[in-house]
Image 1 (cartoon, protein in one colour):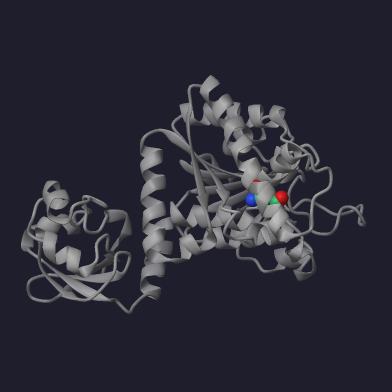
Image 2 (image 1 turned 30 degrees about the horizontal axis):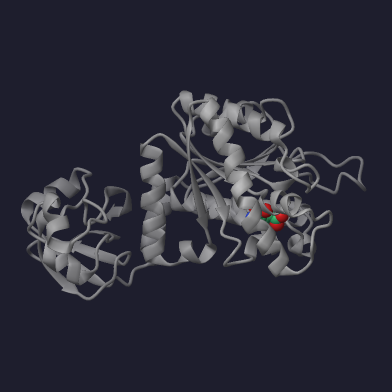
Length: 371
Ligand code: GLU
């Protein structure tokens, strides 16, 4: 089973406050340097890494001279806004030393629930990966408070794994993984080596609902694994204090708890589209586009002869041939009115027709499922 994690190419790595900060006071630059060195080595070996990191609040508290973590949400948000600069700077400084390019991405759960913003975030992140840049992601604590209250970015990391269809999610924490009982009160508690991410008994082992309000307990990690599995990503929860933990788990070494997804990313995507049977419109394709699509290519505007219905960017649309036979469904990159303007035209004409270009494709092959 660990082979699957060793073969993962696109990986979301999440590091929580327990690792990035010195007991919540200021940033742990030694850890950040160590983390950057491992990411750099993984990047050099051809892997695509997206880093989801907390630490903004702790860094902000130090900058503001606050010794105690405030309770008021607006104080925590203010601290996060101050600290995010220092957090990004800490990674940027060390990444430069490794000749690695980084980008700052601040997201909210709502961004990922809204289809249009979902597509926008997805194309930015996949473009960054294509450019060899490591996205450094945190929750946008100025406008939302979900992760401050509930998850220390565990949920956000899973949503990012869904968004970019990552092969794996690695959650680094200060514990060795999931135990089958509380190791503090039960000396015979054993580390869970592996299991299915959707195995419901893990939630109870992690402490059940009672601890779900604490920031970043094991429960939010288990739920993150369940969520990541929905798009086919396997999750590994491991102790980030163990030497070279990230590299070692990604080589398949038996560290931490491995929670595997039972379906492949492709099956998961098909399921997702199948769940959205209500499509908002239809694109009628010429024969050339039909055969291109059947051989696994994206749909370009030039191959579309007619646009039926009214839909927004990000909607699920049906693709049919000239006889009206449905052959695929997918997430469309342009609204119905934009699609009408660019259909039958080459992708290089999109900018002159619309005044901007979102994507060269009308539907990218990654967002397309053949029926
Ligand atoms: N996004 C927050 C941060 O970067 C979450 C961590 C927390 O709640 O301490 O600091």
